[in-house]
Each structure stands twice: as C-alpha cells, then as structure tokens.
Image (cartoon, rainbow, N blue to C red; front, side, top):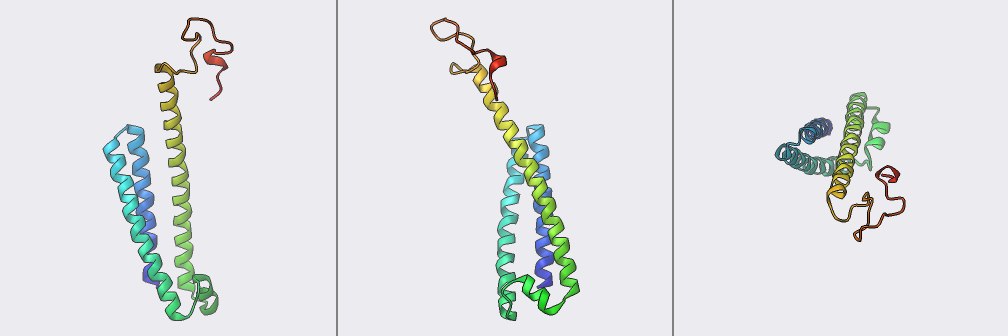
Length: 144
C-alpha cells in the first residue's frame, strides 16, 4: 500500500510538471507542445485512477474503508508521512492547475476581444451598419 501511495505521489509530480510545461507552451504559442503536455496529463490521470482503484482494493482486503481509518487504527507513522507528502504535492498541483485555467481564460477573452475588433459583429463599433452613430458604443464605454 505504501508503494501505491509513493507511485501516486510521483504521478502527481509528473502531472504538475506537465501542466507547467503546458503553461510555457501556451505563453510561447507552441501549440504542438501544448497538445503533447495536455495528452500527458490525461495519460498520467488514467494511471492515477488505476492506482486509486488498487489502493482501495488493498484497503478493503485489510478491512478498512478508507486510508484515514487505516492510519487511525494502525498509527502507521511512515504512512502518515507519505500521505502528508502526497497532500503537499496535490496542493501544489491544485495551484498550478488554477494558474493554468486563469491563463486559458485570459487567452480566450483576448481572442474574443480581438475577434470582435475585426468582425462585422463587433460590439465596439461606433457606427451601425447603416452609417448612423450608435448610442454608447464607444470602445471606452464597453465593459469586458
């Protein structure tokens, strides 16, 4: 069971690293690298799910319904340390994922803004299609 937790912790580190590489690729506009890193995240996530199922089977075979019950019953200090490390890595992954989501949201909003500037359906246009001035249609009055 300890080996399973160690493998899960390693996978979390790999997922975090892939997300960081994906962030770099997004900044550099390297779409192939971005796609490759996102595919790696998916692959690692599937491996993680398999390990999670294995861990639950191991716990059930020992008669425990959760890892918390196991630790509380056995006072296994080594397992507690492994889980603390796991939680630390999981927290780091959560932060990296949040940052990546913010970057994607920014990129999407920027793309929508630029697209609206160059399309006929632009909401920032000062004049309507018939040539008359639109009320409150100034670029500076628009909220994003």
